[in-house]
Each structure stands twice: as structure tokens, then as C-alpha cells.
Image (cartoon, rainbow, N blue to C red; front, top):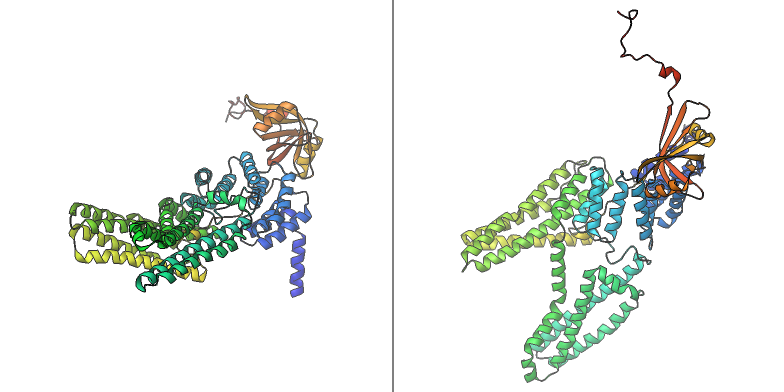
Length: 615
């Protein structure tokens, strides 16, 4: 039985054509089975080496497997076989976008794909993805919105538009994909800078705290001073060790310019070390001199100790207030509610949850500021406290609205999953904090001054615990780095084949006509045609047609069937200049018949009948 089944399966595969295998490859790509898709695409390419579609799908399957270097040759071969195919250009641009130093070429190929298919959203989505890779959020947002205007249900455009609205930074924010070096080299340099800044600030803070404690609490000023200088000397081998890992020093200024938080971390470390050195230098002065320099001495110590937490708090606050989370959640939930969308819907649900936490952090910061204002103004400025309480009461409304939207979207998509209770707990605590602030500001109730800050402290503790748990498990946490870009297979559309009769018509036609557009309107010129091995038309025309095609590559080629005098064929496609002729990649094939004599002499049914025809 097993042998019969295997034999029938092999016979079934043997009967498949190249286009059948391509259809299998497309289905497997969209089912997230790139290895099986690669097998099917290679089988199709073996049956039809001159076909563009098999080579394009081979490149796409290799790209989905992360083998970008291997994907480049078949992607380029697809463009060579069909230079006017927008899908081939799109596939090549997708592969090039992952290779160092090829971003500009990828952008050029994406622009050609958009020029060849202005009514398709896929080239615009890829242009948005390329802009998002470089952190050009306004340009990415415009591209995604244009794509959604063409196709409102495009899942990838919807999800990535939410990322652009959140002002999301890619994992390698310090790296420009247009640089000739790869992200691995710049990532190594970035890690070295991060480690050095972290170690330097931690060492300086601990040394300052220890020296001040020994000198003030135990009257050990001399040993404390020696320990401080030892800590300063220990920074030298730490700096040299990390400096040896930075092998692309010429790119450091550009890296720091692209990643401002990396630049501020390095700057704060340098300032901390300089403040610590100045603090130690002032400690060498006599006691009477130190008393006169006491404010400066204390300020240097504060800089050395508080530089790291101040930088972390400033970064957290800035990232919390960056972007438009409400608009992003609207797009994420719209994409998450699409049934049967697989990986795209999963990414949308994940991003919606992260954006909800970002909005919760923003609400927390507003309530903390209003609670502090109301508490400070309550004894002496009751109207100010009441106004702060009223604003606090309205602060959680955007969060509640977004939470209800996320609950509706996630509850109606896919099978029921175990709900995450922590966002609901954070929302409830923030509502309690708002109620406490409002009651404290308006009524001056003593319990409110404890309930509001207590609820805010509980939210902060909950967020810290969830972050620690996610870090320990290596799972996505409630922070921006857990956001993911939607990346679905694109450009899998089938190529348009030419029937053997259509090929014969263009190969043996006595005359052919090329229709194209120029600034004065549509034009028709005579042409000589032939069919290339990959199924594209080779059209020889005058120079004026070449110039017009460069401005608008959309053309149509007409010919009469030499075997059947009344039959005509029309191929609409994209014309690209080739050696000695225009190469027209078919996008639509039409076949019809010219009107004959019998059609000219047919009686008009609307004409009035004579006496014999009267009923």
C-alpha cells in the first residue's frame, strides 16, 4: 500500500507543469513554509528555465529563509528575463533591502515597480518599509497612507503605518542601511560604547558614594581619597578594552548622529567621569578651601552619582511621549481583526498590546504630575488644586477608550486565548489614581492623598515586575523594543503567459502596431515584432516611440493572426528599452475578431418590418 501511495504521488508530481509548481510555491510562501516553497520554486525553474515567475519565487523563498546573498542571483535573473515586470522589480528590491550597501539600489527598484504598476499598493508599501528602516517616519507614513488609499484592506500597510505613527525605531537605529558596511560591524561598535558608558557611570557612582560615606561616617578621608583615585585609574583599562572592539572609528560620528540616545549615554558617561575627577581634585584642598567650594563640590558629586538614573528617567519619559499611540492602536486593532491573516494579525495583536502599555505610561506620567501639583497647591491655592483634580479625573479617558478597542479587536480575532489580565489591572489602578487625585484636589480628603499616589506606585511596581519577568524569560515585554514590523511575502503574482497562437501571431505578422502615449495624446506607429525566449515581445520602432516610452512605459501592441485573417491579438504591458528593440513584458492579453461581411449586412432588429413580416 505504501509503495502504491508513493508511486501515485511521484506520478502526480511528474504531471505538474512549471506554473503548477509556481502555484504550490506561492501557497507555501503564504503558509509560512519557505523551505517547501523553495523546493517547489526550484522544480518550476527546472521545468521552465526561461520563465520569470519561477526565478522570482526562488529568490523570495530564499529571502524568507534569511539567505539574502543566495537570493540575489535568482532575483536578478527574474528582472533580466522580464525587465518590465513590477513583481520582479519588487522581489529584487526586497532582497537588496537586506544587503549592506544596496539600499539605494533597492529604493530605485521599488520606484521602478511603482512606476510600472501605479495602481498596485505593494510597491508603495515597500517604499514605506525602506523609509521606516532609515527612521524617515513622515515619508513612511505618506507611503503607507497612499497604499491604503489604493487598498484599504492591505494588512502590512496598516500595521506598519501604526509603527510610523509611533515613531518606531528599527533594532539597528544607529545604522543607516545605505552605508557600505553591515549592521554587524556597527552593532559591535555600538555595544562597546554602551558597555563602556554603563561601566564608567556605575563605577563612578559607586566610588563617589563609597568615598563620601567613608569620609563623613567613619572619618576615613585619606583612604577614601586613595580609593577614589584607584577607581579613576581603573577606568583606563576598561576604556582601552572597549576601544579595541571599535574597529570602525570613522563611522562613529555618523552613528552617534543617527542614535541620539547612544550619543547622550556616551556624553553623560564622559561628564560623570569629568565630574568625579573634579570632585577628587577639590577634595585635595585644605578644609577651609573646601568650605568655600562646597556648593561646587556637592554639585559634582550629584552629577557623578545621579547621571545614570537621570539619563534613564529622561529617556523613558521621552520615549513614552513619542508618537501617536491612539492612532497607532486604531490601525493595529483594524489589522488584528482580519480573520485568516496569520502572521500579520499576530504582529498586529502584539503591537497593539505594546502601544496600550505606552499609552498607560503616558497616562501615569500625567497623573503623577497632576497629583504632585494638587498636593503642593492644596493648603494655600485651593482653586489650583481643584483644577488639577478635575484634569486628573479626565486623564484616563483615552486609555479606557483604547483598552476597549483592543479588547474588542482581540476578542473577535481567531480562537479564544487566555486573556492577559495585567493591562486591565493597570487600567483599573490608573482609574483609582485619577479618582484619588480628583477627590484630594476637590474635597481635600485625607484618604485621597494616600490612595492616588499608592495606586500610581502600584502601577509602577506592576510595570517593573512585568519587565523583569519578560527579561528573565526572553519574551516580549511592555516596552518599545517589543514592537515588530510586519513583513509578509509580496510580489508573488503570476506572470502573464503568451499562448502559442499569440506567439505565432506576433512572430509571423506582416505588420504590427504599437500604441503609446506622449504629451499630445495617444499615438500609433508601425512596428516589427518578435517573441523572446522568456515570453516578452521584442518591438522595433522609430526613435520617437523610444523617447515616449521612457516617460510612460505603458504600451499596447496589436497584430493580426496570419493563420486566421479575421482574428487579432493585443498585448498590453510595460516597455523597457533593450539592445536594438523595446522589450514589452505582457500584463494583459486580448484576442478578438474583425467584423466580417455577414456582420455588415445583418438586418437591424430595430428597423420596422415590411408587410410580409407583419404579424
